[in-house]
Image 1: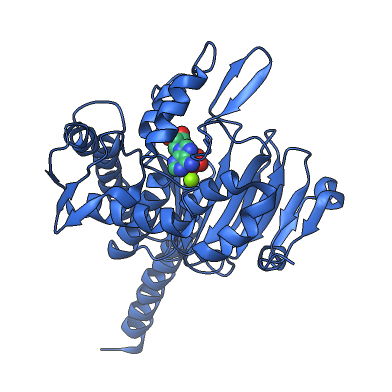
Image 2: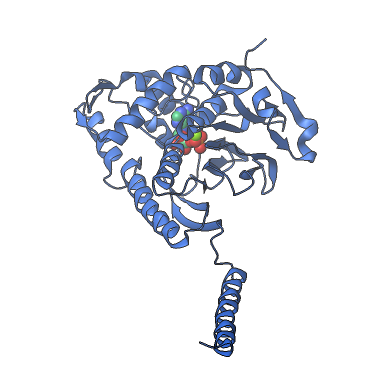
Length: 362
Ligand code: AMP
Ligand code: MG
């Protein structure tokens, strides 16, 4: 081999190397390198658009995990629906109305046991056994109800019968109840429960950095790359944002409000959140936002604190084990627990409405 051949070999090798470098550079410019980025997808379930973002580099595997979640969510929607179809909850309620025992799935058992616990902790203000009352007010339909509120006597009949989760007798997977007025409606915490599941699902599928947002109610885990996830909390009476916050690892943010579902009659808006003590819709509270690692608990607590109202919410929050609460009352006042105040950024136009309240009532 002479020097000239060596030179040629050298040059062609260099050309190949430069060619590869150029190719890789073009690939990186195209954004398909190894660096993870935010990938988004969405699905429609529980009557709402569910938007999912994951910080990952695996786009096609992420979409496959979203498709799988879509199947799981659609099944939950079918099985847990309170009035439509032939899902597990509809069949359970039919059996309970006839005082017949019914064997439930593991998920339903977990939901019912949680329902019992939240009912006890909230002193009955959270009461998913009052499905009959929710139906009486017209909330067992997809459309907003119309017409006059139900008659006082019909409301009184259900309130007097006092159906509650405490009456569920659970033996293994068998559910029994003696009070045929018990009708279960999971509407106040099923979404939070499903959001917990979504985060578990993505973690198991290899996506630990994810945020699942179902119409403003969300659970998140991990981070958005170098920075944490940051979210906005919708204002209860408008399209804007009332506050924003940075999420720390696995957390859920659930809001209950009287702005989405209500019965409007003769200029009065009757909220879909009902006070089990009276049978009438809650009035004082426009919205309650709760942050907790457990989405089902946050969802149940947001509903319970809406019922508890300005006088009782601090005690009930403490009993339910939630300490990050934002409550907007009917005058527009924004009540925060100290733990919530420590982390939430209230938008400037609402800051003069903020009052911080300790969880222990003084
Ligand atoms: P949320 O939006 O999570 O507050 O849930 C409201 C839904 O929960 C209503 O549409 C009813 O189906 C149901 N609900 C209403 N009042 C209560 C209550 N006091 N306890 C439990 N569930 C309730
Ligand atoms: Mg709720």
